[in-house]
Image (cartoon, rainbow, N blue to C red; front, top):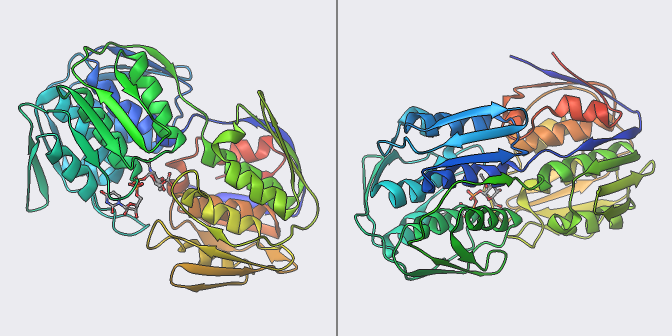
Length: 416
Ligand code: EPZ
């Protein structure tokens, strides 16, 4: 099993081009099923989760191959409608394929996606919305048997702005007759990217980025060439790395409008952050200030995916910061590992209080989940000595090559 070795204590200096967004390209890969054509995805990140999605597409009779940084997907050969339990277990967000398979094949069969490191990951909103569109869904013994001979558009109201449910229902609605509106839709930038992709394929979708998304179904969709948006959580990761270690970096292609709650907090902590059309610059001094309470919330609130990463950046700050994790039940699993490096963090339910310490020290730590693993990298850059990070397969789900990028930013990071 590979491990990361990071020697901290030095300031960062350098620049890197931010990879394409994992949480945008995954629903877009599901959406390619709607076209029955060839789609060229430029800037598609090479990630374990992308590989898992490609395996699902290939298991459904589709073809995919890489040409440089571009992933070409041909879904003309789509056959069958089943995602195997093995493939579902590889990536629980594979539920995102359900809407597109139903829209194209009229039926779908997949095992219930299990929970993950972050806690139970229900899909009740996905299923109730699909039933609203006319799908019949039986969940017998952990397998979902879905039939939708005809999907009919109508108004759907989500009880909470679920990202995955919004995306799944946008895709199913493309295959429904008539107009579907999704009220209380998620507003994340990845939803806007999905809408832009669908429109490039000839779909009639509008409202993404607001709480109401409208889809006029029944359009014949075709392939396209599409450039995936930059990954805002990878951007947040590298900004927090500079904040933690000090120094100055430039992130090419990063777009501040996608993570303004993160950059606002970094400025409050004492970083100088500036952005232009080319990307985001960030410089930080020796020690940050603690900040006002950080409460995770659906977009445009503070992103839950950046909670562990920002926490790592504040471990040596002056003062104490309160975190409140309001999206997932079990998203403080990185705390014990950060404590091994000398961090002072107290967790009580959804709250965690980080009290800044003078210094962190390297230690052997292990990744507990994707963003918790990224947080360990951020903390290691600010720690004296060497940190050995194991179980980095979690990090590989969302970062193309975090050691390569941290080295480009001036960090001492090696994958062995
Ligand atoms: C997406 O997950 C992202 N994943 C997550 O990123 C991200 O943390 C999350 O949105 C929130 O922004 C992808 O896009 C692949 P949700 P998703 O549905 O769609 C509850 C990362 O690190 N819920 O918005 O699963 C759910 O339990 C990952 O890149 C229901 O109750 O998130 C959670 O508490 C981690 N019923 C909340 O809603 C449902 O049917 C938000 O979930 C669906 C969700």
